[in-house]
Image (cartoon, rainbow, N blue to C red; front, side, top):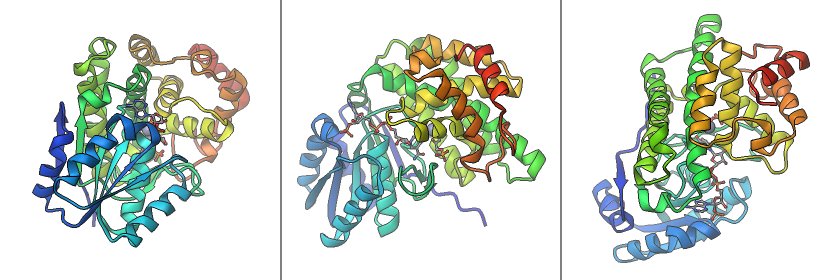
Length: 347
Ligand SMILES: NC(=O)C1=CN([C@@H]2O[C@H](COP(=O)(O)OP(=O)(O)OC[C@H]3O[C@@H](n4cnc5c(N)ncnc54)[C@H](OP(=O)(O)O)[C@@H]3O)[C@@H](O)[C@H]2O)C=CC1
Ligand SMILES: O=C(CO)COP(=O)(O)O
Ligand SMILES: [Zn+2]
């Protein structure tokens, strides 16, 4: 059996805080709500969402200060149980959404995703990335019952986040190639529908790079649609396969090696340049798109030491050994890593 769980409603528009109650009612949510936000996203939209819900529901709130960690997931679970919470709404970036997603999954309560950044494809996906869970990669959870993407709110985030969203989406190109490779070599399950949807999202951001770089509301709409579609592709596949291949392993390796890594999508974008080169794809087109939208394309722009880039490339294959990619079972030698990074201008 192949289970595909998807959001029931996706709203994309302006001034949507007032719509939260209508969405909750349409979906049939009853009982006490919990609004989760970070210290910044509380001010950006969290307080407004909380006030809007108060008009129709009993509401509690929780501020997440330690990012996407098990400690915060634990605090959220405790709050849900202690206060008899019936549904959750996460107002924030990827970290806040992932905390809500895993806590909701573990307690069996539905959650709504109210993103404040367009920097990652976890907005509508069913998997959560929690830093200290023992695994560096995302784990299975549930998708949000609804996504409410307020373009005006998302536009308040620094432009860097939107460019990172392009980096997380363009990685679908190499992720799908890796998936096809694993299908042919290892007989791994492959979904043509999920792969096509994922590739379409990557091609859409490439085609719209000039609109995206303007950083206006239309730009946010283009990137958000690609990120939500990618999340749906992951749900159809039942894993992050359509959106996470060797370029993500490289980014996960950087997260492991660095105290202060760059943004997830910035790292996966640079990883895509290198992995596209290794696949014999048109890596110059990937680099060109990232340049056009102002996303980092090299170690210097990522703020990462070239030596760390090489090390991440050589250890990437060890991070999730069951996910076969262009890096193979043995990974890259130091020489091969250095060569790939130099040829593509990453170092
Ligand atoms: N589950 C999945 O499938 C996926 C998950 N991810 C995960 O998502 C995370 C990255 O998400 P990302 O959104 O880039 O970063 P974060 O959620 O980590 O947020 C980074 C910072 O940006 C702040 N912020 C959020 N929104 C705004 C805004 N509108 N204006 C100004 N500042 C803002 C946050 O504030 P505050 O301090 O208030 O939170 C925080 O300080 C990573 O943990 C990554 O692993 C990435 C891809 C897929
Ligand atoms: O970031 C993701 C997809 O863009 C999730 O991928 P992982 O499963 O590798 O964490
Ligand atoms: Zn990603």
